[in-house]
Length: 290
Image (cartoon, rainbow, N blue to C red):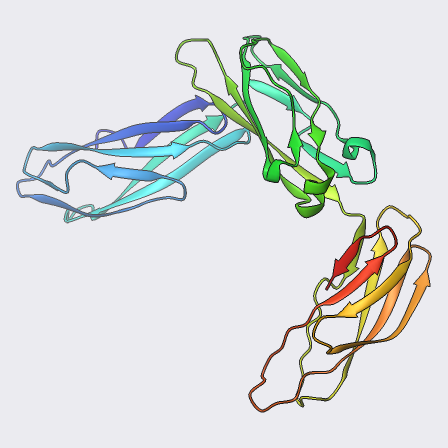
């Protein structure tokens, strides 16, 4: 190999990189590349599987940089019929740097607040070079923001708007913000901001698992419901889909409810496992399924 290390240098987050390792058969017999062991995230392409004496070839490596700043080092292993070095070790390196810094790095959202309490997001150039925002996408479309990709600046302040109904369905995810630069040889980048919304209620445990020896023999379980915002609430009704769960008691303490349940596995010689759904209806129309 002409070099055992390929350093991509300083790159932006989420940047697709392509590098090459040049290799030559320096021996007197044909050389066969039997396998290239890829590192996590790397895609390799070998132009020749077999090289005649004195013949050269290339191993192309594609890699996408991390979305977070920091150094990266990965190794590749090339297996061949070279008796002296049957398993050659190659290294790829890169350092992800932020051309645009952003705050906050993550969003903690509250479903009880207006716009889920979502703060403004500030993006600022670290090298005083202008950039544009080309896209703003959030998981499940839970957050949106107004952008104008034709505008370039060294700083932007975005106010994401929350869709509370979509946040209820998917309370965590990521925001991907696409960036573009007018400077030559500066590829586009993608910034990632994680978000998580604190649910109004927590059910513990979220799933009831019953291990039993005898079908038809009841097993007792406890279940807690907590309002994470300290709000008062009432249980209006409970229901069981298949009829295997019976409420023995329910007691309220501040912003929590405790249920004592009796779960009876169905009888039948062929029944080795069963499923059921316990639904708790709260005042205000919210329903919790266990």
